[in-house]
View 1 (spheres, rainbow, N blue to C red):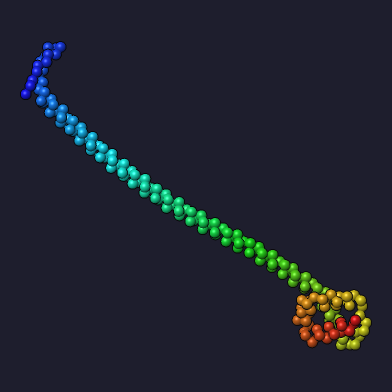
View 2 (view 1 turned 30 degrees about the vertical axis):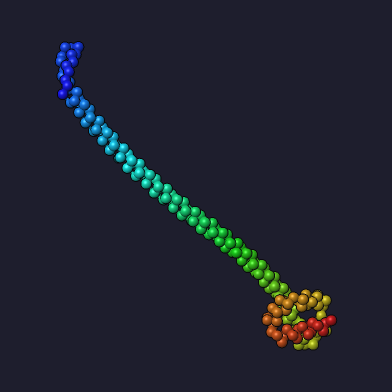
Length: 173
């Protein structure tokens, strides 16, 4: 073992053992290296854990985005179907209004023609059918042009009376 004496400015003597100093430095270096290795290992594990967490979060975000896309597609399909249903409802309402209007018009014409038809049928029974005003003849011609009106009147007065009325109207000229 080599020892040297060093004199300090304060005149103290310090004995330094180089081998002891080298051993202590080696131990400190070993401890530092070991601590550093442990710190690097811990940092590596932490980074791996963070990478795993980030990967998991990325997968979760991708899954959420996929589900969101599916929901969006379903909503779009649903909105298209809803629009179609609304359109069909509107078309149905228009058709109902047209039918109601047509039926109302047919009822009005039938109400106008009912007295004429009843009078004509009554005239057939009395033989006074020879005297028919021109307005009645014109109205009868319009009635006979409409199959729907003819069917409605026939349903109202009965087939026999209707046939007799048509024959009477034909005899008018």
